[in-house]
View 1 (spheres, rainbow, N blue to C red):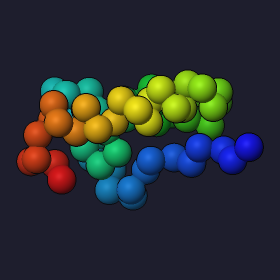
View 2: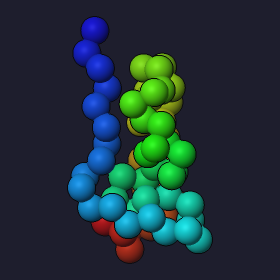
View 3: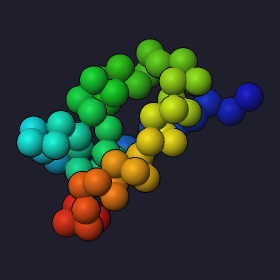
View 4: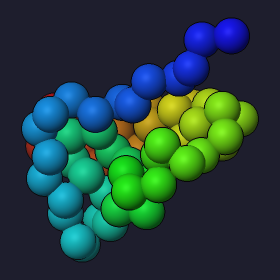
Length: 61
């Protein structure tokens, strides 16, 4: 089984008003704990990223 790699795009900019990084759209907790999360939890996070991108809008793309 392949491990799910981090969605980090090396463009970190944490926006406290949205509580997500505007590069990878993960929360601070998700970024910090990514290496400790189960594959199932990582999949859930990855699945939520497109919706977060929509919510934050195109200002961060």
